[in-house]
Image: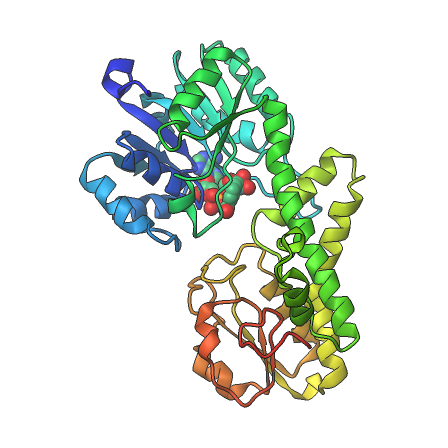
Amino acid sequence: MVQHAESSGFADNVVIVGGGGHVGLPLAIAFADRGESVVIQDISASAVDRVNNGELPFVEPGAEPMLRAALAAGRLRASTDPAVVGGAEHVIVVIGTPVDEHLNPDPKAIPRALAHCAPYFRDGQLLVLRSTVYPGVTALVERMVADLDVDMDVAFCPERIAEHKAMEELFTLPEIVSSRTDRGQKRAEALFGRLTSSLVALEPEEAELAKLFTNSWRYIKFAAANQFYMMANDRGLDFERIRGGLTFDYPRAADLPGAGFAAGPCLFKDTMQLAAFSDNQFALGHSAMLVNEGLPLYLVSRLEQRYDLANMTVGILGMAFKGGSDDIRSSLSYKLRRVLSFKAKDVLTTDPYVTVDPDLLPLDDVLARSDLLIIATPHSDYRGISTEKPVADVWNLLGNGVRV
Ligand SMILES: NC(=O)c1ccc[n+]([C@@H]2O[C@H](COP(=O)([O-])OP(=O)(O)OC[C@H]3O[C@@H](n4cnc5c(N)ncnc54)[C@H](O)[C@@H]3O)[C@@H](O)[C@H]2O)c1
């Protein structure tokens, strides 16, 4: 069991650095729900204000009522002040770890972010890295802590939830827990044991790769499906019919995904982190990137063969990176828009959830003004659309097949 804050000599049990984000906030809410006293530290003043007002800065089903309950119980608060890091026994770091425009990871991102908190580190704390990190970052942080001369344990416990399933998966998925020392391992297990009884112990280097392998594996699976889609589609065949046939009562193929845009803030960048880690010799990962990032271009060139795009207005339905989401990070809908802007007379965009894009129009406007529609994000809202216009629907959301 995690010691109670008062008996540990710390005012709070958990502080989450980057706790205003998509991973940090659900985690903070989950710990508060389990009775821990939690502080969120984040550099985003707007995220901090919204959290303290009981509002989620993004869509995450089920999280808002739990946030409000935690605030009302006095178990959760948010701050931009790095000094709050000194007040909690467990310091969990969940800042973003993107690759740069040349697809290079930044192994120093976490140590750099920690530099702001380091003056507040105290003896007796457990520092947990929760971001998806470039392999070796845990060892880097261990050295950083050793140089500070603070008696602090370090653990790496990667987050494996999917956005929109956080409040369920945080309590049901097994937690991978790793630390170099027995004491660190026991403390990290006790902490995550508050969320689930299913814990998996690995060495830090194993855990770092486990997380990158998980996301790369998923990305490669989507690429396989997308390549099969293009092969079938080039021959006038409907991939969804073929997939339905081959997976029917055949468990060995049950995990073949449907075709669709494989995007978002994690899968692509973590595949590229793994590629950089293997000296750019990750043939499958790079191939997956070419296929997945190439799908919007493939769709446009197929549509170009059938339609006079230069004289048409094309409507893109859905700009978030996945169905039901308001998150546009690394969304391929934007790549589709860019490609179409060179080819079509006009491009209109709509999304029922995205709030940060001033160019979006109401769905009805886009349906009325477009000559051709592309469902780019499988929001269930689009299942019921009624239109006479041609619709490219690689997701088979309308049930009319996926041929383009
Ligand atoms: N989004 C997912 O579904 C998901 C799932 C599993 C793992 N991850 C990993 O979790 C990590 C975080 O991803 P995310 O989607 O939550 O990112 P995010 O951008 O939504 O959240 C990161 C938060 O960190 C804050 N931040 C950035 N620098 C900071 C600093 N120096 N000090 C304090 N706060 C700082 C930002 O303001 C933001 O609120 C990444 O490594 C990601 O790969 C994400």
